[in-house]
Image (cartoon, rainbow, N blue to C red):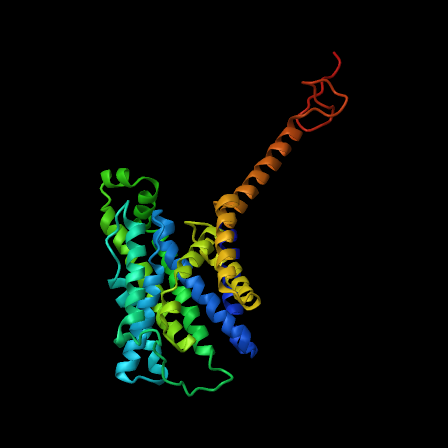
Length: 345
């Protein structure tokens, strides 16, 4: 077990080193793709901290993301901020998004999150102080064109790492145990003394903070704050699909799902000019995953490997107890280990 843990740690270290070296390759397009991939890794992990650990399907991630976008956009616009200070604004976007977190209810949670999403989208589209349909454009960042995307890449990498470490810490804590107890049986968890409302709300706010921070990063990366992109309903569908694809409720599942799905979605959007077709394909892919791979790639692969290992061990045990060919059952071969010989009297 210790050697396996060391191998896992070594593999993780190598993976992080490779990911950290991507911007140094000098490929601007690869770095831009990497920013989006890492943003979706962080968003999927954040969504899974609440939805995967509690079993509540949240449709509020797009609200948190959009709130983060407009928080940083409005602060930049009214305070005339520029330069490297913009990176200090990202946590403020996450903080405001966390304050938007709602009290979670069993039967009305999904409906409420959908209603709040459309309220915020309409506010962003129609109020003058949000820029309306025109949106808000950030100040020009006078950075070197060859490395202009590198700060965004490393900021997205840092957020993704923090989200993953936080999810791992929560999973192994008493708080994580309470979240999983709610997922298994909320009424029983409440009967055992779990303060389910407080626990769910805390997880919801943590998820909102991470997603809102990513929204602040997106504002400067995308160089605009538009309602249809900041409050995009398909953002929720995309990160939920990533979590389900990799493994809903697991630690590594959302990361694997984001790494597999986001590069494909970026390529597909370039190939398909009709946005409705892209949305239909995304919805169809979600149904395929739910129907044919409901537990996700990692849990399914783990079950297959466990079954294969058990099958091999069973066959090996059967071969060890079978008598050699041509020997009666119950007899042992002369000279074989465990056999005995008798001298003639």
